[in-house]
Every structure is written in structure tokens, then in C-alpha cells.
Figure (tube, rainbow, N blue to C red):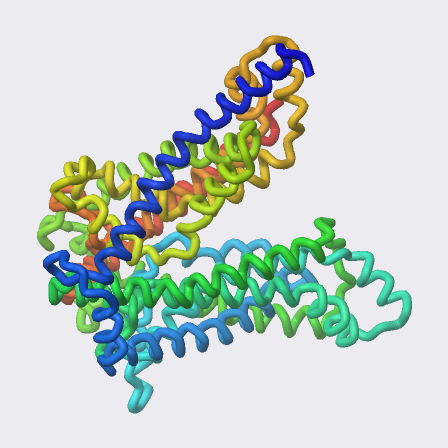
Length: 551
């Protein structure tokens, strides 16, 4: 090896290390340091003195806190079974039938993704609460408790499960069905031998995604759990209600254990399913009147239930006084009368734009550098580990960890408390993993020869990045921009501990309004988020189609 070649290799490795330094610092400050401080507080008292495992001993000695863990696991398991079962039927109908209104069903079933998890809870209150439209015909029905949390969890997680299982079923090679039909296999035999056999790992993945979403969600438990204790709300009670930060940190670590287990099992299942997926478009299935009619009815029923729950909230925002005066009014949108004004809504838009813009830049650059930089595998593996870590950390836990990390006199980040900068930083980190994995998939499919050709022509790699890699990744960049924007609008748990008096968000205001009994005002603010998210979705589709057709 010549001296020149050796020098170029060393120079490339050095530049790669320098490029990876920035994402390493970002991820350490955003994930590593907060988790370290959370761990320190879990073995300390409120004065910061080391007490070992006393907090954990106290936790497991407290029957009420142990019950919260058992309640959370029980509710999550029930939601997992029911939600994934319904989602599989809907996904099967979308992929393997000619049910009526398939495009409309596929679009409408996703509406809960465009609102905070609190929003469908308000709909359940309108329908099944103490003075609900349906509950008045029911006897001995109590919405506030495990029943309400389970119903809210199903509505919240169903769209996620449908998307996952639809992707899984579409990945099954259509030639298997053609071969089975030629051999005279019945529909049931095809279902058991092909559909179930080739989607087993996808079903497992969906189960653990639903379990994690239910286990970690704060909004549903806060609104509908009542006296039924759950881990996500216990953290909030310990920190906000009792100012017991050490026990809050302890409960947070207890909550991380089942979510981490679910995360690793989900990762294993996704890899297994990826090996089974053929990535071919499933051809149109042959019509069957009985099958198509049955699946049309069965698949539209849960969608109709979702629309009823969402629609009644929009209706509730436009009536004078529930449940006595149903006359139309815009008064519920006069948020000044409720002490908040419109500022929380504008704050949410500002934060959503900040997170979408900076989040796309940071996650895309991190993904590109981790895949294309010349550096030891240990360094790139470390970056990947910290990039995927937020996926297994509940938003409430991450928010509490940020308090411990940033709200310290010796921390230079202490000045960020209650600012948009901290909220945006926290939200980007909270949503980092999905964006990182998506960009990895896109960049990984691009030829590495682009950089090699650029270097052979003495073109700097940064110029190749902007002129070649970015244009080829434009659709994914737009997808992640939309993902970050909408999820920032609807997030609750990640920011519930971090907002300030001037940075309170619309999703938090909905929670506060519901707490104070202003159900109509909460519905109005939630409807604003829904309309904003759907409007942005329309803009996204139009712009995305324009980019696809652009040369």
C-alpha cells in the first residue's frame, strides 16, 4: 500500500470520526445523560443523597404501586388481544378481498392517528359517560376504570395495528395463493397455510407495538382510569402531586422494563417477518360475494365505531351545553373565556414546525453519516444503539429524565427550562428512532458508488450529498416531515413535565380543560388539532404527488 493511499485512508477515517462526533454528542445529551440522571435519582432521596435500592424496596412494599404495575400489564394485554384481532380482520379485508369502499376504509381507519390520545377519550365520555348518549340505556356501566382505559386503548392503537398488519399481508407472495388455487385448496386452507403462516411474525410485532403503546400512554389513563391506578399516571402523581421525584424515577425504571422487553421481541419479530416478505404487490383477488359482503360488514363496523367516537367530539364542540342544550354555537372556540386563549394552539404549530424542520435535518444527517462515514464499527454501532433507544422509552419517562438532566444549577442546559428549544429537543429525541430507521432504509438502498464517483472526480462528499443523495431521498424527507409535524401536534406524555407558562401546548390544554370539567372547550381544542392535521395531510398528499411526477 502506497504512502498516499494510506494517508487518504487515515484521512477518510478521521473525517468519518469527526462527522460522527456531532450525532454522538446530540444523542448523548438527548438520551444518554437524561437516562443517567434518572438512574441516579432512583437510588437517591429527594435531597440527592445516595440510599441504594431503598426506593425499589419501598416500591415493591407498597401494594398500591404494585397494583398499578399489575393493572397496567392487565389492561395492555387485553387491549393487545382485542386490538390486534380486530386489526387483522380489517387488514385481511383490505388486502385479500374486494370489500366495498376499500380506499375510504383505509383512509378513515387512520383518523385517530391525527388527534391526541385524549381526543377519543372525550368521545367515550360523550357516549358512555355519566350522561352519555348510550350509557343512559345501560345499567351498572362505569366508564371510569379498566373498562374505559381498555376502550380508549383499543381506539388509540387500532390504526397502528392495521397499518402494520396491512404491510405484513401485502408482503406475502401472491404466487402462493395462485398455486394453492390451482391445486384446489379451499379458502380456509389458504388462510391457515399461507396467510397465517406467513404473517405470524408480523402479528407478534403488532402485538408488542400495541402492548407498548397502551402500557406507556399517559392521556387515556389520566382521563379514564379514575381510581384505577396505572404506572403512567402514578409517575405523574408522584412528581406533580407529591413532589416525590425519587419515587417518580423509580416507577419510571419499573415502567421501562416491560417496554424494553416488548421492544426487543418486536425487533426480533420484524427481522423474521422481513425474511418472509416478498415485497411483491398482491394481485387482485377473485371476487366472492359471500366473503366480500361479510368482510365489508365486519371491517366497516370498527371503522364506524371510530368515526362515531371522533365525530361526537366534533359535534360536542359545536353545541351550547351538554347534555341539556344542543343548539349550535361557536362560543366553545372562544378560548379566552376559559382562561387560555388561542396561544396554546399557536404554540403547538410553532413547535410542530420546529420539530419537523430540525428533526428531518438531524435524523437524516445522522442516518447518512452512520451508514456512509468511514469509521470503526464500534462507533457506528454506538450511534445506532442510542438512535434506537428512544423507541423503548415511554414519553413520560423521557420527560421526567429531562427534568433531572436539565433542571440542575450546574447544567448549562438549565436555561432551556420551559422553552420551545427544550420542548423541540425532547420531541425530536422522542420521535428520533422511527425517523432514523426510515432514513436508514432509504439511504441503504442508494448506491454507495455515488460517493466513490464523486471522490474520483474530486467532488467533495458534502456536495455529492446535497446534489445527489438529498434529491433521491426527497419523498422520504417529505414523509418524515409529515410524521414529525403531526406527532408533535398530538403528543402529550413527552412534554407533560416540560412546558412553561408561555409554551403550554394545545394537547396539554385539552387535558387541563377536561380536568376542570370544560368538556366542550376541550373538544373544541381537540377539533382544531384534528382539522389542522387533516389539512396538513391533504397538503402532504398533493405535494407528494407533485414530487413523484417531477423530473
